[in-house]
Each structure stands twice: as structure tokens, then as C-alpha cells.
Image (cartoon, rainbow, N blue to C red; front, side, top):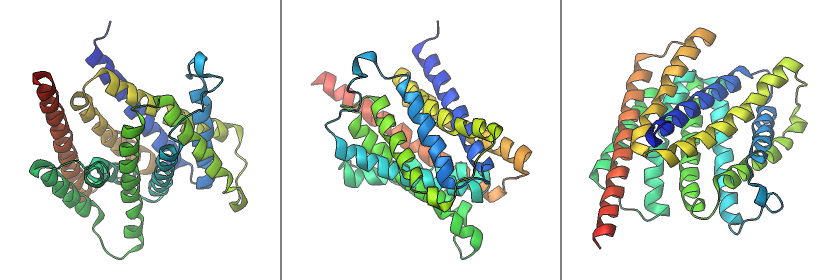
Length: 294
């Protein structure tokens, strides 16, 4: 039998693998409109969540008293998803993954305004380090390539608000319901893109595209399970395996070789997010200690 920490590691590793495979399929799917790929992400995600809804909730699984917050979570998630899909098609895989690691930096900033959290000098230092890393990777300037760098940053902004909203929703809503509404919103949005011209996939491509939704669905579930069984500080570093996967697959499938500036910027972004996660754990321990003493 595995211990809770070992289970947490296993779920996080599987989550990283599933997200990485989803990214590869999205990058591969350039012959299909983004809206059509969104359909596969949403529809097969919905299908997956129907399999894990508790039997006693099958008759009213959709009921919620927090529809407004679900809507905000879905809108921010849709913005993030569309942005990352565009980025994956237009930029090297390792570059997109490197910038996406910056999401906790924006979450820290949002938490100040949305959750009224106090941010100390260590987390502000982490934010500055992270932004320096992003600047090194993107090299802000006016060129066609630079324009596409905005999309992984938009993804980070959207994902940051997703993290805030899920933190609020998870106090009353089950994980599968939060994920179900998001997959449903993806599917509905995709239908609006049909007039842009969808392409009839052959059987092989249909099978491959369906895994965008399956991998995305199980990845989110496994990520939640990882945090359930193990401490965030223990399993979070495994997320950065995604960069190794991106470098490996980017090189062997698309002949992409990450530049020195990309690797340097990625290192700074990873350091900044690790500082943020460590400070989060430290704050929780202090709070728990005070609660017990009181």
C-alpha cells in the first residue's frame, strides 16, 4: 500500500503527463480550427465527468447555489484555454510551458485585491523575479513573433483567477461539479465557431482529438487528488517535469531547440513560484499553530 504522500506524488506525476500529452495534441491539431478542438476538449471532458458523479446526485447533479461564481470561473477559464491553444500553435512548446509556470505570480497579485490577503516581502520578491524571467523569455518588442507571447501571459492571468474562484467554490462545491460546468461552457462556446468552418476529421484524427478532452479531464481530477493526499509543497515541484517533457517532445516532433534565454527565464519563473508556494505553506503552518494554541 502506498502512503498518502506517495499517492500524492503518483497523482501529480500522472496529471503532468496528461496535461503534457494534451498540449502535444493541441499543437499537432493545426489542420483543425481552434473552435473545433475546443469542442473535443469540452465534450469528452463532460463525458468523463458523467462517469464519476456520485449515484445519489445523478438526478440533481447540476444544482448549485453559486451560479454566478461558476460563471466567472468558466469565463476566466475559457479565456485562458483559448489563449493557451493559440500559443501552443504559434510558439515553441518549451516556451509556452515556461511562461505558463508564471500563473502563481499573478494569483499572488490577484489575491491582494480579490481576497484581501497581505503579501510580505518574500512573495513580492518572488513576483519581481518571476516578471524578470518572463521579460527574458519574451523580449518585449515589435515583431510578429513577439505578438504571440501575449497569449501565454493571458493564459496565466485567466488561470490565476480560476485558482482564486476554485478556492472560493471548493468550500461548498464538489470538484467534479466545478469541472463539469467548465467542460460544458467549453462545448457551448465551440458551437459558436461552427460558421467559421469545421473540418470533418478522419477516424484516426477523431480518435486522437478525443484525447484532448480525456487527458484534460483526468489531468484536472488527478491534480485535485494529488493536493488531497499530499502537501502542496511536496508535490508542486513535480509540475516542472512538464518543461522537460516539452523540451523532449518539442525537439523530437517539431525540431524545436529551446534557446538559452528561454531556459534562463524559465529558471527564474520556477524559482519565483517555488518561493511563493513555500511562503504559502509557511503561512498555513503559522495559522494552524495559532489556531491550536488559541
